[in-house]
Image (cartoon, rainbow, N blue to C red; front, side, top):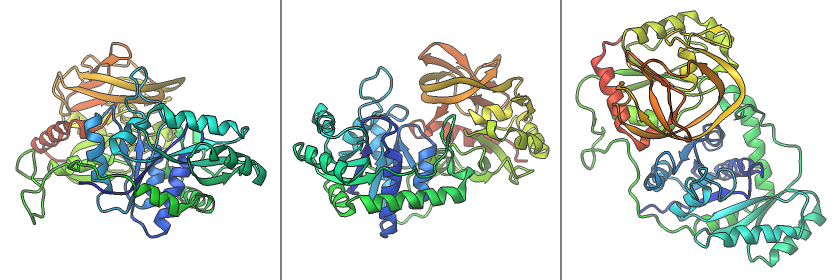
Length: 463
């Protein structure tokens, strides 16, 4: 039984203030001394970084498309274990989900799977009595979604607030907060959304503090906490990357076999910020020693590296610096050419290319990458075309693409994935031990990929 008090923070549409309110609530409750578990609906990597800063805990994603509906509650239970409160930030509008797939992956679906009350954040600018019709429509659209209250954002004045409150009196839903129109908290954006925390650490700390102060001043935290405590218990076993062999056991069972713990180097730092917390947990549970390194600063791979994981991020913003770190580029190239397992997603794919926007990269892949005006965005269904240390041929996975870069050619002679949605195509590269692709995946849905990867690391000589 999972009985963590919880709230889902949703909105009628994007840009209503969900991130400010959700992050501010996390910070405000954490400042009260509560252990707050932060979550984000959907595949987004950036908002969870701000959530983590607000709470001191890993920000975790709940994605019903990539992980499946059956894993949403167990992943939530895993992340929220031992916490006093969980705050779940929604995605897009409350009922918006995977394109053409009904409610799948929507905030509404996740709220129902978690049996969590929803707080609707409404951009109240340029309306008064109409807010009641808007809220009524959202509250009555799906009777299984329980909207427990409203937070009014961008309210202009005392009179504006009074008009909004009078209108909402008829709706039967309480106003749990009023946030006045004010200069936006400094959270700069660029071509893929907010600038990640790792790129603006001190400024991000100030921004999260400001969000917390704004929410604390405008919201009834006691009423919000009381609403969170109305969430019923979930009858779900928490997800776990590995299970202990019995009561009192100190170490997890290593599902992938016995032997030494191979070092898996994981790229981090400002250029490679996209990672799901569960990936490192799965690698560790499979028997690896996970060591993070920064391709912008470190000139060597971690000692004993047997395998390499390079996730997503913004290498296009740091192409000159990544290129200038020739010692590390050579080390990555040598590791890849030796046949060691290398898993690269999106930014990692670009880093392994011959060049990015004219700047030399590692040259592992015979391809060139450049920035583009076109945004590639959306969920994907994929099947592994070729055997690799990450996946056996025929392995089916769901993933997500999110980039404004183009790689030419898009696929090698041995592609990584065959895509089945939205169009049929092959994509990515498999060569020697390298599996490189634009596709972001969530390994919690297919933990065998982590076990397979570590097994290949274990049989490859460490460098």
